Structures are given as C-alpha cells and as structure tokens.
Image 1 (cartoon, rainbow, N blue to C red):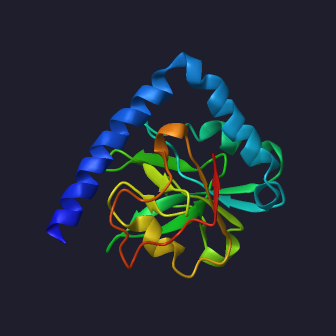
Image 2: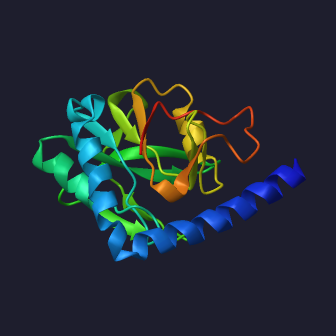
Length: 184
C-alpha cells in the first residue's frame, strides 16, 4: 500500500506539472474551448437543473466559464464545502454567497443553503489523470470518491489531452469510484 501511495504521489506531481504547462500554453486555448462546448452540448449537462462544480484553482481547468454558462441558462450551481473526516457537501452558489480560502488553498462557501446529494443532477468531477475506462486520480484527499458513493446523478469530467490515459498507469483501489462520462 505504501508503494502504491508513493506511485500515486509521483503521478500527481507529474500531472500537476503537465497540466500547468498545458493550461499556460496559449496554443491550447482552442482545445479548452472545444471541451467547454462539448460539455454545454452534452445532454445530461444541458438538461440538468442543478450542477455541482468546484471553484477552480490556478492549475486546474477554469470552471468560471462553466459556472457562468450554467447561471445564464437558469441552472442552479452548487459548490463544495469540505467537512471533517474527508467528507464534503455542496452549497448553493448565490449572488450573496460568502467565499473563503481554506488552509489547503481552496475556495469554499461560508454558510449558505446546503443541498442534499440527491438534489444534484450533474457533478463535474475534477482530477489529475483519467483512464478511458473512467477511473481517475484526484488530488489525494478522497473527497470525491466518498461523495460519489451513492450519488445518483451523472458524474462528468472534462479531460485535457495531458490528463488522458488509455489504461490506468496507477493502482486502482477498491474505494475508487468511476466517473460516468468523460469529455475529451
């Protein structure tokens, strides 16, 4: 298990660097726009009423265009708030939502209306690496794997070329939960 954790940690470091380089390359902007447009046309996403999505950080695909699109198309948007024991919940994002930076550098809502897991139609799942058979490597906290257990909506991940692998190059664990749809 320790060796598996070391390999995943090394993969995370590699993927953070690869994703950073990809996102900083101006020539990749059309590819990023293509991913957004594919998401907006995806039936589960387009027909959803309530979307769960992270507030992206620097070396992640920017989620603001997605949030903006969803809000201008009369969708409810909910963003995650972490809880003790590596759990999380989603809070409705409203014009007066107060956001605060956590000790991990993520931005989360303070207070606000918590939505039940069953109220989310679609959940956009972040990650660093994805296999074509829908497994992922996240940032190492296990928050999304825990949340996805029992999630009945549709989970979707936007995957850049540097994040996509034909097969997992990491050990898939019993607790890893597949993403329903990959857009790449």
